[in-house]
Image (cartoon, rainbow, N blue to C red; front, side, top):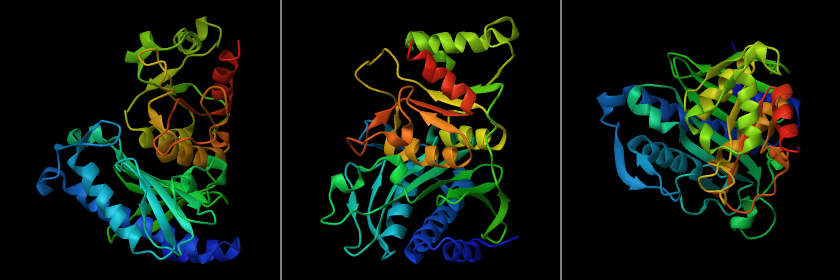
Length: 324
């Protein structure tokens, strides 16, 4: 099994990619290895529970949210290739190295509400090239298709790094010695599926097209879709998307009526864009129900968005319902 550092060196050379890009990916992997060690300790490390602070979105932070965020910032600042970074847990971007080539955006611990009950969580990251000129917020506001790469680390029964530098998707598993080893390539999301992931408790708040879509799935082979579906819900986006990459499905977090001015709950820059790039590389589809996710022009670092992501047939079906 190929070790990550050797793979990156070969992959960068094969596709004529900048060495700095490989270096940034290596730094992210090393930081996530450190986060993994904290996650594995759990109560033994005194890192469970609330931090007593809130993030820019007004959400209560878990202790591990803060710890993971600090680990990533500290690691990325030491990499000369990183010009700046932005985190779901920070109010504003953080400047790093003036001559750096890349901007990193990340959700340090996705699904952190699960950490106290020992359910899978993860780190999601996006890599962008820094535009010419002075670093400012606008430097980060690039559409998803402009990403140089993206990925995530899933802290589950195994700790796995999944990433793309836009030349395929690769899965690495952390071994007992703390090394990521290549364990899977050539991922392909099936075009059709019989699984969906959504928080059904919010059904009464959804707009009619999503209610209609879900009702069709629940009707099974007696309804318009003509087949029976199974529902899954982990409440950790990275875990949901990982399952879909492995065997197909659709993940949904739609806009709802409780705050119609808010286009969704999930963050475009830290969650939707990096995972959409992964999904697209695997042949899947991602949208906000009206536009391809990777084509959306960001308006703010913490912009929210509705998300429909996964097997092509289902995402396109949802998109069509929103056109009626």
